[in-house]
Length: 254
Image (tube, rainbow, N blue to C red; front, side):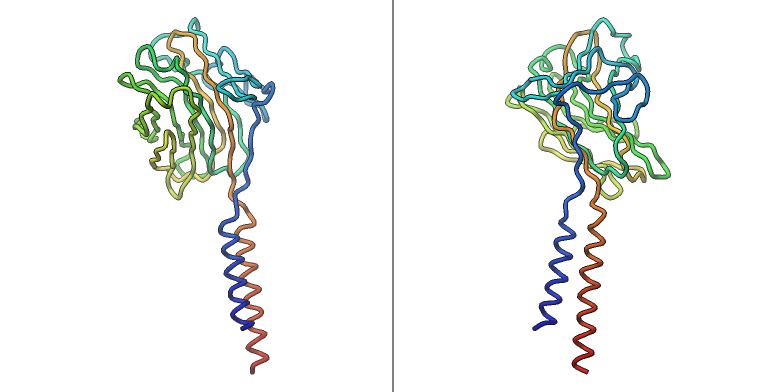
């Protein structure tokens, strides 16, 4: 009976360890956010070109403490310009394997020409083919609002097409390393694409796309996850304790 209990204890420890949550980190938008022109720890620094505004602590979409990114149409630099992708980047803690954020689907996104609207980007490190660039974007395609993912081979593919009922709501976008792949989730759909051997997400980039018109993008609830380092330690400890007790029982029986 004691041996049975010991095995059950080890199984319980292993089960608890396997289910242990990852470390989660959030970056608050509740008040002013630190910005910089060049790479600076703890600040959102310019990627490609700076948006017109990057303001935290905004009340929008029924929420408080939202990040508002403003685009000035007068800063449009011509169709296809590299610098019409305007945003800011933030360096993450080491070992991040997933990140998530909410995007508000504004009524203004439903009108006008087909265009790229807003992007949730990352840069990954730690592999022979690094860096790679996991990306989920909200675009207007054929008159529809569509979440699309980047396959790291130069092509965007469709994840989910939004409906009229999705307008005026917050939609969650998630990028995670899952084995050898990136897993993209948005609009209630998921898809995977190769992570090219990378092992962690090094930074997040919040982009908006200037096509010659003024508009704003609203972000909220950004968070990251790092695998819990104690998970394997607890599993090893549990099995080690079980093995030790089993050996003692056998010695007594002998």
